[in-house]
Length: 266
Image (cartoon, rainbow, N blue to C red; front, side, top):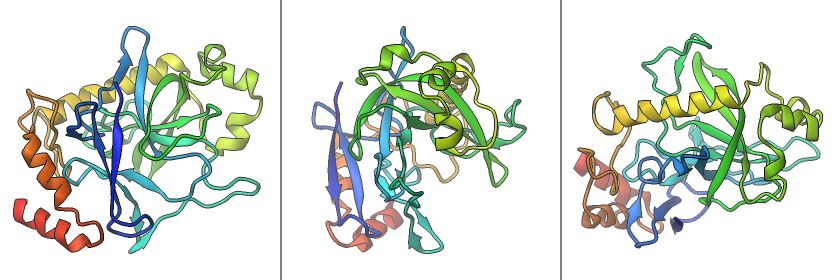
């Protein structure tokens, strides 16, 4: 299974969007339509790369927009960029999310005591490859760490790209400590305790169950947009024609067309 991207607007502007297509050319949501599993029996997952290694633009899945394209995050009216930490530029790993997962803001996590952050679960790929924006990769879960951000649980799942030549040598968080000594503590600069593979898998699968409730309307979506084209039993599933209209509403250079479309369909 492979996916391609379609860029609309100019990079590093408010109107820039990255849409996704599947092998049939159908527009799909990276949040809802890309399957969570690349190989369920082997616990191999798909991951959507939002911020490639060594890049600065803080891209993210637009969970509140139709078809959930990638867009650049905004803080206090300004586009966000990842800070450089000498001697590195941007992130030192490929940063992204696992599709068909959702950190439910209505669920209080038993380990953190905090509710979810209303986003798909995040991944940090420690493999050697510098991925491209919007690339969908197959990853192996090694461990996880919970960050508490403004009172919300924000899991960071440590993974390795299955294309990495050393992927077979990494099977748990202890392998990262053993084969890349000091890497987690010195490079990730996260405060807290890294949990092992089994804990991480449980967390990912739990957020997949939360997503199932979301996409089937058993949980209130709030401001999230659950429009999809492939989850056929979902009440949010739309036609190919409607999906194309969503993308066409995003002008190459003018965000106003897109906002008008959202106002009309709200």
